[in-house]
Length: 308
Image (cartoon, rainbow, N blue to C red; front, side, top):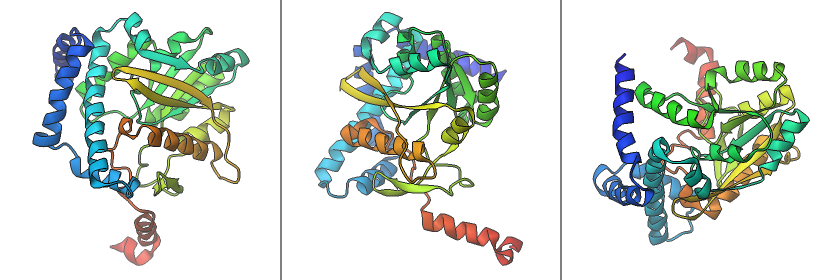
């Protein structure tokens, strides 16, 4: 009950903000950015360490410029999500430029499940606007990780319902996808698969953005079971408040255990390097190294450590 009351409170406060034009919200975004950088200092050490890892050859001034640009985008993203409460379909369509949506229509006509892989890049909450350009009847779903703040989590779920999509909690993905597949109706599932895997499932590693990185394989493992087609969603930002979102067929990488996942990571890597400020640098992507993971696994499997 308390969570529902808090959710309605969030909706009331953010709804009032959402009635402002985006140009006014961007003024508030600039103010929030200053607070995040100089007062709150929200995860600045994590952001700085990640940028240094990926761009060691850049000067201190260049890395600082990227850091500031990231925080500007992060704050814009917050207000763009808030704006979803009161933004018309016409304005959203004007701000989202779609490319490659015919790939989804093609999957629907062929009766092939469509798995769209994207990253925490650009504005993933506006991405579902893409599907309004589909000409075929199709069910749209996205996998999400429930937030600890249940009231805020409920708010985000309400915002996503404006696109008539189905939000699937991570723990129910396999069951839901198999049910959709058995119903023999066209469907799309979007996976945001660039985050750090849970500590218990980090046995698969590759190089991502020049770093030894564990990666998530769930989308490909489930997709193979049902014969899904894999598509990458790319983001570009030609100017503030506008996004160019493109869908591309993912070609499997040769000689890899998870060829579609590896190709997806390579495509995402190229997208991030093209406009690095659009990626979520505040995420602790490399908090556990492969050596540390192997050491922990060895301790767990060793009876002497297991007793401890």
